[in-house]
Image (cartoon, rainbow, N blue to C red; front, top):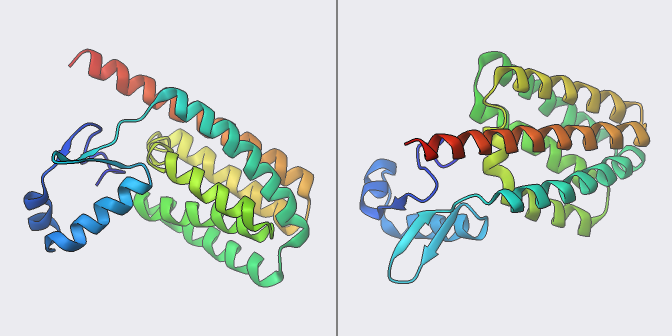
Length: 205
């Protein structure tokens, strides 16, 4: 609901309403809110409950700069270390992602997309890099989702993923690094443009 924009930044989360909407009790809901708080989606305040966390532009810029470097390195390592089984799994996910794109299913597409990026990071065989990537990526996952709301940008992202798979199959680490760095740079610009548009919209509410 946060990723889809059903729950807006700064919105207070009513536990009773959410429990009714999701058909669950307060215990699993509070556990979910705790986990979302750790991932940066929700801010939990003592005695005041939880609210959807706001997104900070400077944090977005800084996080994407580091993510771009991490993904580039992960891609270069993965190209030389990935196993045939790991490559087959990533290609299968890519096929699944393209099917979601064709159907216009953004949520399913995004889940497959993120899985691909995470698997490439893990295929590099560097545990510290993989864990650092996943932790940082969680901080900008919400805005990464929003960046594909433009159909043109969404189509471009799929084309870039085609290039990633081709470079990975060719075991061309230098090419994959360049593609991933460019992909993240493009994502960063899309995210910042969406962020600026939201800010302008809020200013005129």
